[in-house]
Image 1 (cartoon, rainbow, N blue to C red):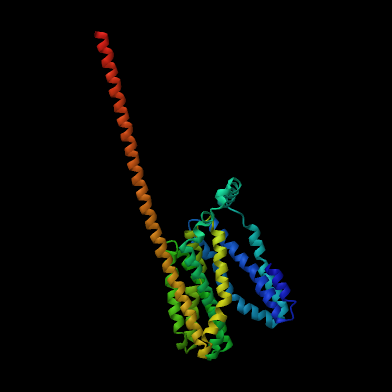
Image 2 (image 1 turned 30 degrees about the vertical axis):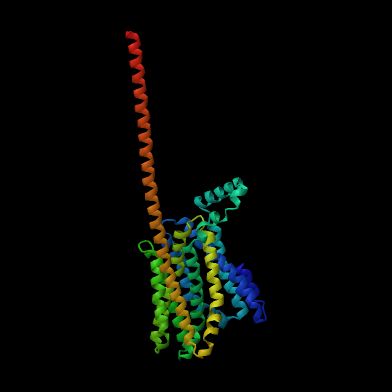
Length: 371
């Protein structure tokens, strides 16, 4: 699908049609490839999901570092139309990777059990919609969707407006390219580092902390006067935001489980895409009255703070649910012990009553014999 989108983009002569060929068709193809690979990683690595996801998504950080320079080289060497074809051919190599992916035993058994349950489902059970969706309508999952929407709006706003902001601040095109490249380097390191940290640290705490820090750094963007400081910000931004997909994937596994991972991750990425699409124009409309591009980044920082707060809120809700569940389990266990004691006590009384009855019958029989 991505190859078709890039191929059609090479034939387009009106810029408006690129919204369909490049933005929609090629974009949907790449999004589905990313979602599929993330879900497969979750199925195969159930115990160390964060680490596996971090390694898988590190390729995106490398691409962010390499492809801006490669794309510019292809445009300078060939034409824009030929560049579309070459990029589509490069992306088409992911088909080989997808052909090597196979469903795990867990996925096969899960699908088989779902088919059997659907076949045996009665009309009364079909009305229980809430039990079917379960964790997909839970409060932690809703908070994660809010976090993803705010995250998409913030990231797309920074990515879109940062080059022009640096240009207005006096940076040359080469300096802007170097800054964006360091953003990719930071993202590469972040994906692997946070993936390993999720094995020892709660992913929601990492999500809240990292985006809180990068939100604070974004507020000081107007004070970056030197090239070094701008490169430093780009590196920090990539370092603290690059691992967001790793953290979200680990949180999703904890909230919805593996059985609903594909559906949960798809909905999550959909909301993130809506944030990417609507964030920049909406935030720009909000700050047009200020006549200062810096306030766009202030709004982006607010979105980053919202992402941070929802991350901490997920931790509090999940922790409360775990405590409540532990209390319930303890109470159930205690009630079970009490019931067992009552059963044993009842059985003992019945046994004693049976013994007394037998002794009385034996005494009567002995008396009758003596008489």
